[in-house]
Length: 315
Ligand code: WQD
Image 1 (tube, rainbow, N blue to C red):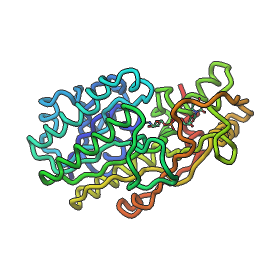
Image 2: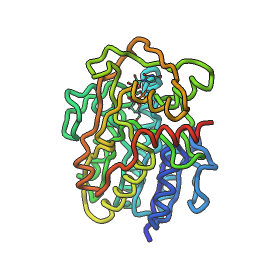
Image 3: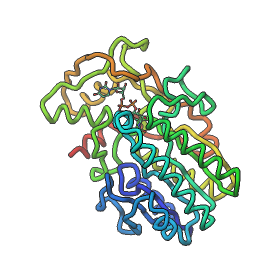
């Protein structure tokens, strides 16, 4: 049985990954500073260390006997990163620096790094492959690119097997107690509007897409979580270094998401079209063949599952 460190394991995505790593037969140590994570979401079978990844000494201690690290702990709000770039560089780039230093000190051989489709910025084509140019449009996306490069560079200097997972639009919940508590993204924002008796908004209906609204690749958090376990299996088995898109390969427009929500709540949500939001690419869909080949993994759940489970888990 191997032992893994999961940073950010008390968060929305991390609490799913913690459960799946345990189910895969691994021991799990969660390291989380609980700045946005929730203590009650850490499964009882996992150990919890309350500390920041910036605390290299605490990370070094937590790495005792650990084969690999799944590194999720990071700031992730794009708009906030534009307002507070230094905080994003400190937390995200500083976090990877501190973690890699600790891993180097104790000789941890495996890593799964949480990256983002934000590394592509406004993609020149869609679906987008991992070899497409990296052109992030926000400090958040920049910190994710820098993190990938740092992991790659450390791996070139010593033996480190790594996978970077580039998440597309994560949604849904694996169980009603594990919903996304933040309201940064489309589906939580639609439910918040409905809870407040307001009309959900569609940001732009004049894009060059079939219905005029933006297209994204929404992936169920349980599928995303399963990709982490498959990546942990891969880095334990072989010496690799690769970035992989984690999406479904299928795009849905904002209008289609509104329809899916309408079906789940049993009435037309009455979405209204408003102007474009700055910086939104018209279409961002993952090319998923590389993840399928390397991980033997593919997404199983569709948009209806995501919306239904998010609805069941909304607070
Ligand atoms: C999805 C679509 C909006 C709210 C961001 C980050 C990305 C990743 C995921 C972290 C867009 C539209 C939204 C609303 C709307 N984050 N929208 N009405 O912008 O694709 O990606 O989150 O890793 O890096 O950039 O996600 O959920 O904000 O928006 O019409 O009330 O929904 O314009 O087309 P996005 P999102």
